[in-house]
Length: 414
Image (cartoon, rainbow, N blue to C red):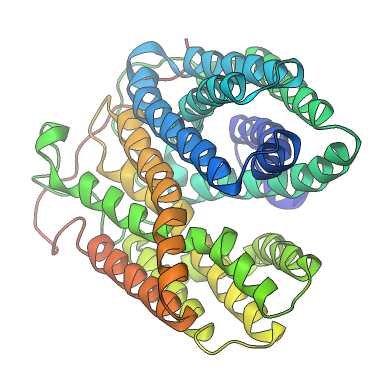
């Protein structure tokens, strides 16, 4: 990993390290939500679902606000506002108890995190504009390193006390904010004069073409991109919800389900050389996204008649390779579509779409799981991925002649 990092600009390495810190803190908190509401507050699981929904909606609102803030207010101000708000919410959870307080603090935490993540993606494109998809992939890998570290620490801290886990989350997010004050500085993070966008090696199909630079509300392409990502997350989130329940119904212990996420993290980290080779051979980001959706579909078809653990491992491996292509690919495609001064706005749109998918997916999957045989659920989710594939494949329309937008590198930190 360190060898690969040396190939990146120093500013992107700083962004990578700060993202690891941030996602470590959040990964301590997120898995504890259901356990805290059900075990600590003594409320039924339906209330845990309400809290998760409120959290996702707040996160969505933060995404939609954070992107335009990056464009108009500056990246560092946006990141610091979100980080200080999220840290205050986590510290509040450590000392305030009861459902009403927890819901209010959950809204603050969701808004704070929602402000940060579009700004991180927009920063990645700003500090390495010629990097294309590789810049977003670096952020994606950093987030997964943080999730791996935080998930492990969260379980250990919660064994001692939930309030300790929340306090540590607040401390880590506060440390991230201080890092942002010190580390996200310098020419790479400073607002710069408009300049043409440099050429990139991954300028394949799906790059901006004539007709995509009008007012963003009147441009169909980013909305199709967001819709495709929304559909993908509606189906993908089943790995975190209904599949966990289904494996327990089949008699598999919880540690086997947890091990699937260890497999997920290992594939993401160890599969980077293979991913780099693939993206060099197939430079079109749109083609990469389509290939990722095909892997998503195949992963859920693998689960149709799954009875043994090996089938779930195979499905997770296929799904992980799919997300390695899609999750960084969609922000890269959004950045490519964004006209001058709208980089943050477009990143906020796709981040919000992902948050909306994570909010709707558990409810949709839960209804199907309760009312239909499990193979119907998996087949339906394969269909949702297929719909996402079609939308994402068509998001930028058929190849057209026209000049690409000269797009200034703008909206960095102030």
